[in-house]
Length: 162
Image (tube, rainbow, N blue to C red; front, side):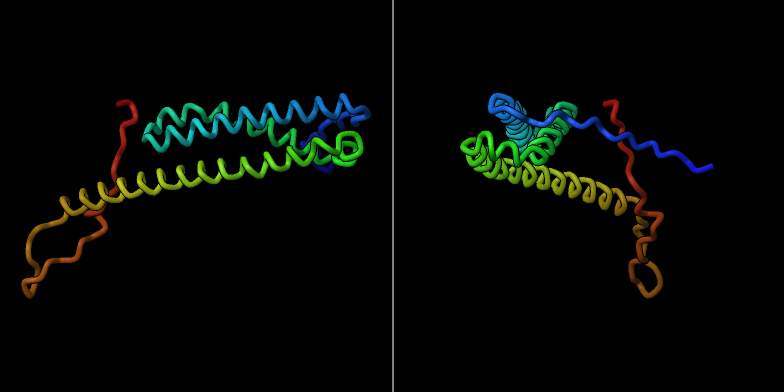
């Protein structure tokens, strides 16, 4: 017996036939894109201000908007021929806006990367400080410091309940 596939093909969406349908699709996509960019700007500001916990509270909403954005983008791509025929004037401004939004995304990614580096640096410094404190402070043979063993540089624990 052959194993059955668990992948379910999504239902095909109805093709766009009128200018009104095309403009409605573009308006819906632009609304999602605007909401997503606002959220990304908010997240970037929070991260730059060092309010990382507040920024992580936006994750669920951001993931939802990203899913809707990607779904809309796939739909636009699949309906591109109809859109160019029905509303050719509306596609170039949308493309320009999309390109402008890429700068906001780059700024967001840069802020998140810096925050990650700072957090990793703090954890490394705390870990090495604790490792130095746990290392023996005696002289070995030939009056030299003994090498720090791996046992001295143990990991650290974090209590998230605080």
